[in-house]
Image 1 (spheres, rainbow, N blue to C red):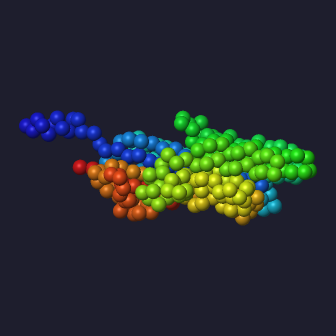
Image 2: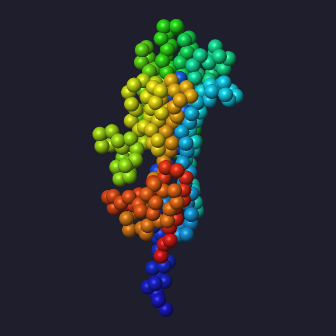
Image 3: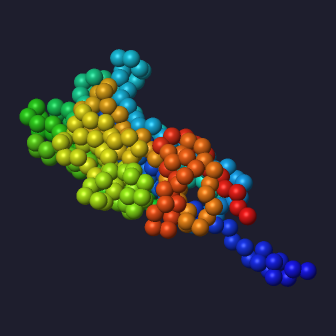
Length: 297
């Protein structure tokens, strides 16, 4: 009888994975989009032979009432998720930006930013102030995102939009002559971005899930500026004043294991079955839907 083998088997602990899940950023109307929700898991045990599914949320766009029913506003981004076995995690799409002139257009209240992973920025109107959308629509702890900023109006003199919320902070409130800044993304996974050349590189620090703005100052984390889409696969919110032409940035999922874990079998991964190796870890990246599984001895 192999007593040592029996004891070793009884105390075997399977390897684990860490994952970053970023949803698609919100689309814009006059108000900019909020960033896609950003969530993570760590040290989750891998089940040999289990197929884990990855879904990537697309960026939100613009609901044009001339071609679609309902009010004009930025639409929410799509959710991103990782699921399989005992693992299940979903991040919520970023909130769409509020429209402008909503009362005059017969759609009262739609100037407010929409709730999402991070909330969309408020639209503007000549004589009405609107509120940014709420972040963390999934109600998660820790929070997946932050609130969008409020608009500013001085009757028929000046009207400005709020900034979209980001994973690293609230969208800025507008003031006289100044559009609200997009909330910065999170730099908590900067080393992951550096290892995989993903995220928004700002001076060597990598950010994910930044809110959009209607101004010209680029938010950290892939959020768009006025009339500019959020950066693809960052979860960045769409820039404001983007009616019909710009979108939020699509989401991304990154999985890592320690370097000693056998290489996984993947579909849809950016780096196929050859993971990025850096700092003692293997990284797998999805910018579109796919799967991953391991065969463990």
